[in-house]
Length: 225
Image (cartoon, rainbow, N blue to C red; front, side, top):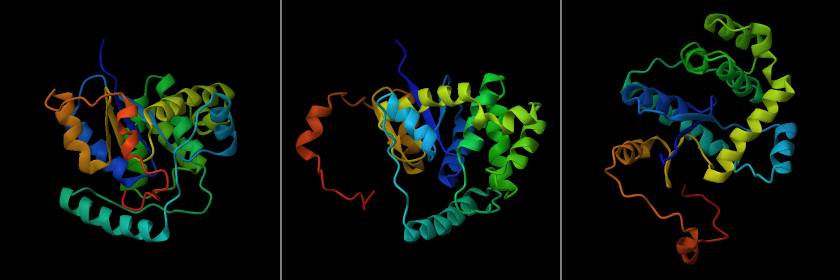
């Protein structure tokens, strides 16, 4: 039985974009790309109905300002072309992520994935704008209306619940998040460990969560993560 190999991404996250750029250079076989985003009320309700939970916590202003500095430093070192996109309030992240699921149905997931990153991070456009999604769809040879309205499609919403349940079961709480078997890796600074795991150069951890319980701090605020 093959070990699951997953990459959880979020089109909003610059770290997810950097992780995707690195992953493109390595190209491990049969890796599953799974979207993970801030849920609207409808998606959250559907996930709850399935018994799932969404482990997402809004970041502080201080952390956001740190990320702006950190990503400028990282992309400069990697010589990636970065143009900061607009960040209006109340962006609806179902729009680009459910559009990705639609593109996947149409057999164009990778093309859409690459184009949406290019649009957001190289061109600095708001990918939660349905007109921008329509432009990306046209560039990918997809139906622009069906793509921009994917978030309104009930069948795609239902399919997205399956993706969210995978994230819940894998304990995804941040992006990018890599999974290989029982080994989990959060953040681009653990990317090399993920690759080592794929290469069989890293021991697989136990799936017995009970062994960690003596060290679990129930009141930990997560400030050092």
